[in-house]
Structures are given as C-alpha cells and as structure tokens.
Image 1: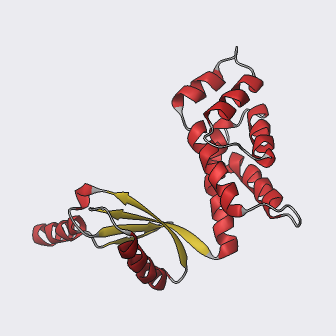
Image 2: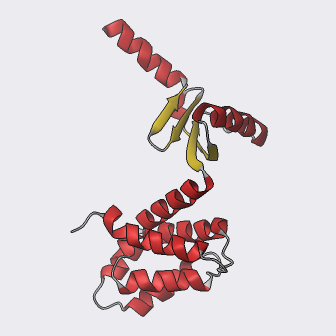
Image 3: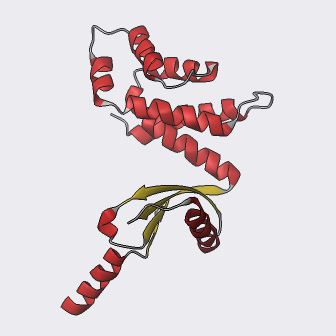
Amino acid sequence: MAELATIARPYADALFKAATAAGAGVDLGSTIAWVDELAAIAANPQLRQLADNPKVTADQVFEVFMDVARSALPEMAKNFLRTVIDNGRLDAIPEVAKQFRALVNRRNGSSDAVVYSAFPMDGAALAEVGTALEKRFGRKLNLTVQQDESLIGGIRVVVGDEVLDTSVKARLEQMKAALTA
C-alpha cells in the first residue's frame, strides 16, 4: 500500500487550490480549523472500526462525521469529506490536514511551533517567548503550548524538524553525558 503522505498529497493540494481560488471567499484559518476537526474525528479508533465494517455504507460514515462535528461544516468541508470517504481514504485525513497546514504556512511565510513547558504559561509570557523565538528562527511562528512536567523547568520548542531545548531536563542530560564520558 502506498504511504499515507503520498495518498494525502493530492487531497491536500486540491483542497488548498479550492480554498485559495480567486473568488472562493474562503478564510484559510477557518479551513484549517475544520480540516483539523475532521482529522481528529478520523483518528478515532472506534470511528475507523465503524468505517471498516463492510455492512456500514459511506453515507452512514458521513452521517456519523456530521453528528460528531462540533460545528456546522461548510459545503466545501462536506464535499471534501464525501470525496475522501467515497474513495476509501478516511485514514489519510490526518495526513491531509498536516500537509494542508504546511501549504498554508508556506504561503504565509510562517511555521507551526510547539512550546513544551514544565509549567502553565500565561499570555504575556507566551507573547514574550514568541517574539524571541521568531527572531531566533527568522520567521513568523504559530505557537501552541503543551505542558510537560518531565522537563522540570524551562521550555522545549519544536519547529518542524528543528528543536530548541532549554529545559532543566536537557541540561541534566548534557551534564550526565559529560560526566560519564
């Protein structure tokens, strides 16, 4: 079977072209939101099991998605979802969301960044960290924060395949490596 990234690429490209088409009047931010929501729903193992059941029709799977979705989906979302379900590519939706976000980021000249923090961060601290990170990485960053108590203190930032680790845990690991070498 082909790799999911290969399967997802045409769907992500088509969705991006449809969302950015002249006169489409589609907000890319809202498109990212509903694509991410569909990806979260599609990643659910129970839904996957239901969709893999040969007794369940594509229309029934589509209706389950509509019932589970938190918000009313636009017509573009419904058409996208119906196409993916009809082609039996439900498992590719999370990868489609990832590739779609990458296309939007490339167009906007930005990147997604995950800030792992040992403690909760307030808005002011996040804004300050965001400004410093944008200077460090040289581009606009879309920050999300996740708490990771194993860091002990400090932060760990992941931007694509780049990692900036200033956590206490990383410093302790460096000291351990230096002492045992």
